[in-house]
Length: 471
Image (tube, rainbow, N blue to C red; front, top):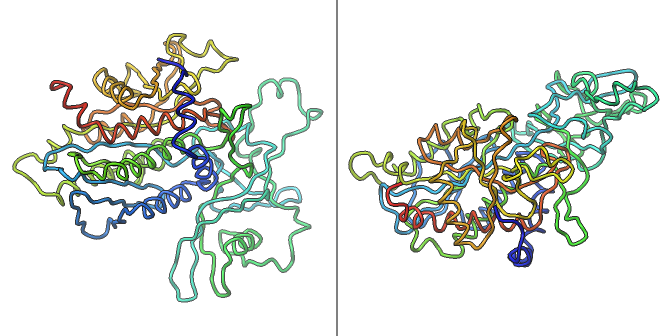
């Protein structure tokens, strides 16, 4: 693949403020719930219409829509003004979840004079990076209102109220220090408060699941009115250190959850800006962005990529736009393509031997096409070629990646969605370091490279596909 070159300066300069917008999104999107709330607001501000899965849909050419499931998965689509039954759907897919430590159903436990937050690992994190960090809380809380309704409220305690302290060097053996393997049950509980400091008149009332002190923290953060009650919650620990642009020339972005909020941001901005630029006037396809939950744990949920949500969306869009003879849905799928966008492994300067030297992506070198002969990625020669053609149209660099033949390979939503929908796919993503750490690193230029490439996919896929001579 091609590395950084003259295009890097152009990418950094325009569109103006995109990297800053991305950092703001990262600081808002502290949980999948918050990521979907931010995406929903951006779509509404751009004129997209929210649909309910519980209601019938009226979809028309030139229209812009989105729907949400579980408030952790969101799918947006815009119908080309010249769409005809049997035309394709151009899908950008990413995910809203990231590895983290989530609170258990009875999250507050007493341990040696302290109230601790009892956690369970979500996904495959680099858990040692969570030690000695200033931690807050984020997620959703179910609240019973004074009228008896149960509402969802999002909470973000953005101050250091919890910590998982390391054990001092003097109390560990050399063997323990050389191979740090914390017991996730015993060692990853977070100190919440010394029991002697718990106010006797804590603001909250204990429930069967929740300690009164935690209830009080949540009530204060949410500003609940008298008579409103906390019923239940889904919370995770979050780093309180803000996402930021770094490097002597601003060439990096440091943050948690780059995997995969970077791809979510790029996809979301791509569909919004693509529609704003051309108004869908000559678009024959449906443009779609699908941001799924639960990728980090296998996608097997009602709102994961392995669920029915994507294909149901295909069905409802096709049905609403009109059926034209036999096999309208099947013809649509045959003319469609899924661009599965998830972060890639950049070459680490201290660990060069972990990469195949000829397939080692570089930071700020553009989106990476991922290949795997065993279908851990969905890419094939046809879909990779389409993606490279789009890179040329967007004037952005593109890179290639495959794991070393003596190493295991991760996977993502590409093979899952491709198999379930029966739609060809390519797996791609921006390169990064420290994947699944509490604090990850990527290139500033790559934020823009990826956005431009994916916007070109939405705007030009149908034309490029028409040049593929029946491939």
